[in-house]
Length: 293
Length: 307
Image (tube, rainbow over all chains, first blue to last red; front, side, top):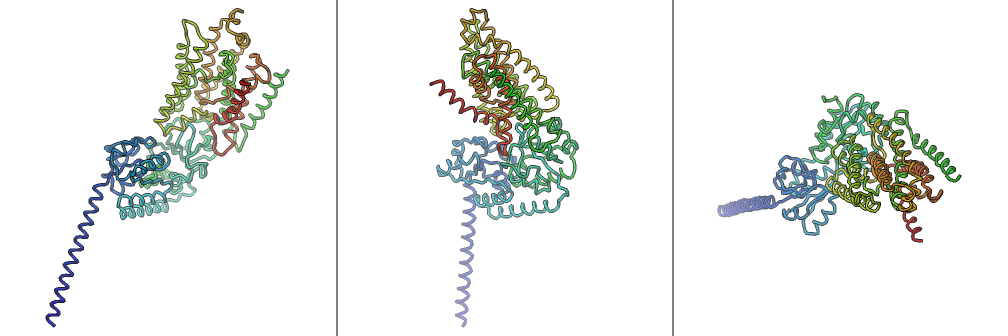
């Protein structure tokens, strides 16, 4: 009996030691693998939206090159520039030996497919709605090996946006005109990212439906819609907006509720990135009161 | 007789179009007075000027393909407008545009001098070269500032939807009145242009100072083109096709062609802009509409020349 229990104990001991060893090796090798993966990562980011997503996933230190438009977070200013959003220098990208190139769609589709031909790993993320942006966070997270962090970030962003939307439901909803261009006048539809944010924040976009998400509009249609708030990202000044012929009776103009880039950061609203939460918060503040000018 | 009939017909057509132009859709007095009326005036003035200047250039340069933009002034005006727009100085766009037109005009003027003479061929060539160079500058700007492509496209394809401020509108009205006076002034040279179409030598022999007349017409027409491009951008083909259509109907006498071109140009552009606004839900650039109608005509004109 004693013998038997001795053997049993020995077996148990060996098993335990083995288990510890194996798991130790496993853990170590996993750590090692992860470290080496992170060490070898070199991202080139062509779109400012993706740069912001990577920042939230704490991968900024692996970014080796960006386009001129990528200005957030601050640390990107020191990174090598590979051109502008719509005019990227292919050679500079290749010279940086990226492990992943993050590209947007539109102008960048062509360059993305060219880089893929050269065997470079190109990940395209082009979110056009809040849901697609949250999905984009997961895609980026997947690509850079930060799946858990991405899931957490997407979930908390979603719940934060839902909370903001729930807690501010003005009645009637203030009518908002967002001007993105002046010559010719251009605004956004509800299908655009910023249009969705306006509605989510509790405002009422005066152009719910347009031919395109970002579209040319007529001056007289703005006058007819009589917006309560004007958000102007077209570089025009408050005084000049007020002096536009026929605009004097628009409530936003009469009540001095015209907001410019310095009142609400356009990157918070126009970029489909995680900072849209700040944009929604600020929009709600602007709807609540007229900020000092 | 024929030209009087055409004149009356165009006038009626213009009034009907103008009525539709002003009253389409739901509008109130505010929109009518402050948005649509300015646009109507700008459209009419632009169309009249382009067609009038086109007819003068075709006669003066003895070239059926001449149009208001051929002497480079439009590119200078467009470049000026674009620069002001990129700097965010929207209200100053016409001022910069006009300044660009003036500078270009001066440059072309200097290049066109040959031993103190104002040479026709030299004028045409230097106008085209300067225009091409400035177009290249605009292309470069468009490439570098892609986010402002809409502004540049609006200038290159024509945009009559200029938003005026009250002061700017007053300024524009003054310019329009001056412009109309200049258009009338130019009509006084119509007879001389008719004579000149027989050749410089012949015109000189009957006592016309050919070079001086060309200089004067060049300056006046450039000023007008400058004003128009500064406000409305480059709207192609109006200046080319309208005078030709008019000539097909009433013959080549500039005295008849010029006033009918003025009226025809105004009415034609009004129609095109109406189409640009209402053809699709998305407003189209008016220069595209005029080109859609103008291009087939241009081809037809060329084929007809060959035959």
